[in-house]
Length: 116
Image 1 (cartoon, one colour):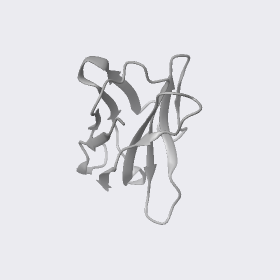
Image 2 (cartoon, one colour; image 1 turned 135 degrees about the vertical axis):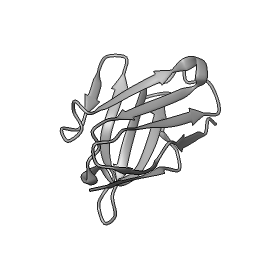
Image 3 (cartoon, helix red, strand yellow; image 1 turned 90 degrees about the horizontal axis):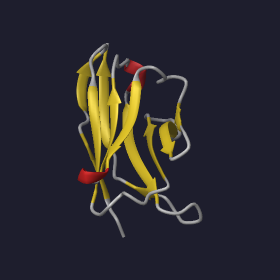
């Protein structure tokens, strides 16, 4: 089974940018969906961005600031995060689906902390 490893998190100031990476141990050419989620302390995990062949979807709170993308040649999914806000502080997780009926595969998460 493919495994996912996130990286690129860190501590930044408000207004700065980060690019998160999600490296897969195998090919992601045939995935049907990919996504980034986040979980802040004491809160439920929430969708940040998702993409299928048909469309890309963003949480209202990140629209215009975050962009999800992929590089099949590198087996990597990205989340470009611009104009970061303290409210973006959370652990960020990526996931992929190879079939709609199967379970999503999750990474272990990467911490993003935005100071004001």
